[in-house]
Image 1: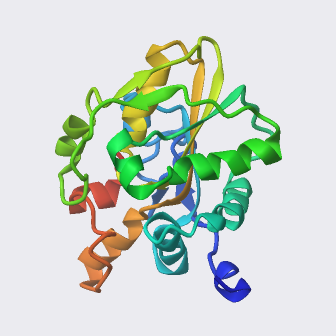
Image 2: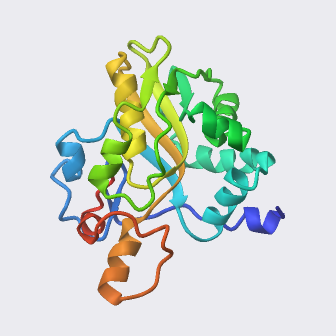
Length: 238
């Protein structure tokens, strides 16, 4: 990949977003006085905070696909630097945990893209990386499922495999779509005793695009249109 392509992704921006899960909104009405969205107020996300570099579209989406499906593992370096841009420097963590792949999927792909990204963050922040969660269910693909089906699909998919009691954990993944998978993994860490779980991803699906598509009847990539239009308006991630 040339330097020009690598320099094109831009950070996500929003006038209104949840202070916990960082979901961007079209207006402030879904947020309460503390700046929390409905899902975070009801405790429906397994993680305590979430950060993403950019929207899952355009050049960033293409780079992630080349990295993830094209097997260009050397992209872990420049993409890892984008992750560092998204993570506030004042945050402190005891351990970095990559989102695990089921062994069959890892065997087919040859690597875990989330682990490669997590290594970059671990190296630059001098925080140890540990595989403290395993994926014990080889779940079907989430694409095309409703939000409820996504939650059911990943229910019981993860198992803690190390000591996390009292730790502040940084969970690293490449993309957050609805957040169902990340929530399930983070909830597993919390049940194992983690004190705080922060999710860090390269990109997230920006549901403002879906809402705009429904309002203006414009075309957006099929992979971006996930969940219902009502979820798009509210910014739901679970």
